Length: 475
Image (cartoon, rainbow, N blue to C red; front, side, top):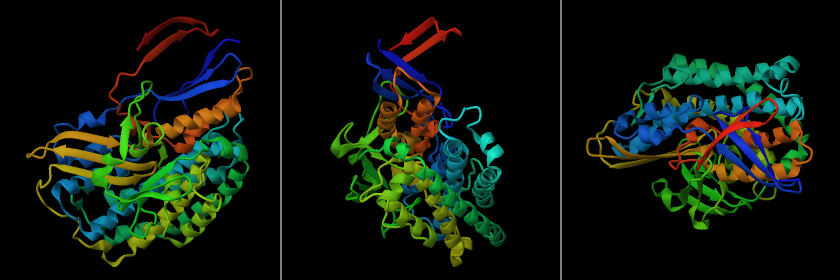
């Protein structure tokens, strides 16, 4: 048997365009596997020359699924350029908006993109294994997913005026206070959202238990984990300080200063992908592999800070003695975060000063540099800008959540491919499991493709019999 390459193109049920290549040796064993992101957005270059005040609205266009995360991180970077502390009501309103996006995005990932694998089966015909298959066989579950995502989107609309690409979050705070009627409209929808996510957790935990083999092999390895925590070490998505823990759950970086992130995070460019590969600088590349996102956040915190989510978090952490290492449990962690998000929104909306009209701090350019860090649904998001004396952006660096996970995704598909794939017998279910490793991370590739090197390109024209008629190779 000669060496061969298996190509999965495109990777399905993710945001953006990517492919996976799997190298098979002469004995039919998996030798290597790579995740290639084949699109380029390059928002860092688009930003140069623009007034920094535009950055929240401009960078929000990076993505239609998680624009709020970019609004928040960009606005925080601009707060630093203004050198202001935003009013407490504005801070709380930003938090509610960010949590609403977390809920809708996690609901999309779990119910729409991943649940078909769990409820219909990893080996099911792909013509059936999709949202429509869920709707046909489990209509109540499909409705719950739609309603939960609708809840998150409706909160964004109540706060910010529209569901996608709102311009409500601005440097210095937000541009309009919350009214009592809109607050009460949001609060009235919370009981239904809580009921849905509790049903999802009850069902989800049972379903996940049926996938022990996937739990063992879906990016299940020791790594570092990174995310934000508040001053009590609790779950935090909008403010807080960075914390890094190792595979045993031991804290190796605490209260890390966001303005010095380059001291502990470096970025590598892979030659076969437009997605950069950040790593923990003290350990070097590629040993400094780490993960971010819901799994990482569950691993780094000392608790969630809301009653129901704290109970679920304690049960989650009981899965392992140290950090929970299997990336299959990203799905479980998402459900806990949805529960937390709904609970925490209610806590914030019941604060007495949430309706204050003092929601924006005004200033001019006081610093030539600003760095904003927030937790997007997929993990830690970093915006870093440098401006001139006129407030025009001269340089921008965006480190996106999906990028942080790039090294882990590549190692994860190799682990799964070696377990499920044989070069001699290839099945749809085996290939789907390799794809499902990527879906566990829920990558957002439109957000994260900023690498500047020229990626090698291989384009082939293939006939129906699989024969290559022509091909062009670059690099």
